[in-house]
Image (tube, rainbow, N blue to C red; front, side, top):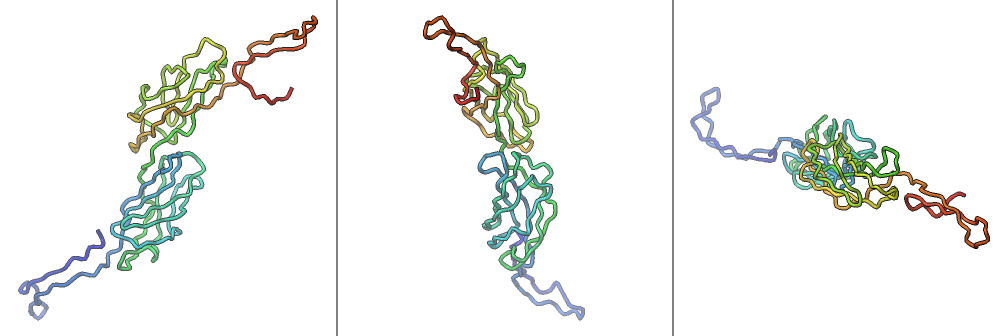
Length: 275
C-alpha cells in the first residue's frame, strides 16, 4: 500500500548532531511521496462471445477517477483489439476494450504498457509509475465459437462433428460431451478443436439433421485453468451436401404419356432454384 502515511516517533538520548547535542523527543506525520504502482492486470470475456472485452488493472493504492486511455497500450495484441474507455474505483481500473476481429481468448504473448502521465495519480498528486511489457493474466473462459457436422467419407451420412473453441484446451474427457439426434461414438481434442465421431445411420435420409450438442465443464479447461463455458442443446451447423436418392416418372392424367418426374433427396431443399 503506497498510500500509507506512518507517524514517526523518537525519544531523546539516541541521536546527536556533530556537536554532540541530542535530538529532542518528537512525533511527526509523514508526507506521501510514494508513487502508485501497477500490481496486476487481467483480461476477461464478459459477454462470452470468444473475444476479450475487459481489462482489470490493480494498483498499490487508490487512484483518482480519470477517463484518459491514450497512455495505455498492448504489445503483441490481437487484430483490432484496443482500449475503448475506463472507469476507476479505489485501487482498480476497469477498461472496456474494442474487441478483436478474431475469436481468441488466449493471452499468448500479449503484454501491457503504460506511459506515466499526470492524469493518472493518487490523492496526493503522485503520478502512477509507468510500465513496459507487463505480463497479463488470462481470466477469460474458453467458449465454443462454432459447431458443425460433416460427411468426411462422402457417403452422404453424417460421421463427424467438429466443435471449435476460442483457444486451446486441456484435460479432455469423452463423457463431457453429448449429442442429440446424432449417435456419438468417441471424441478427441486437438488444440482448440473437439472432433466427435458419429455412428452412421442405416438410412440415406440424414444429411440434414436438426442436431444439437451439450457438454459440462468438469474437465475441459485452458492452460490458465479457466474452465470451458458449459453448453446445453446448442445447434450444430449442417455442412453435409444433399444427395439425390431417386428419380421416378409418372403419368398423372392417365393418357399413356409421361407428364412429370419426381425427385427424392436426402433432405429438404430450397423451394427457389434454377431449372
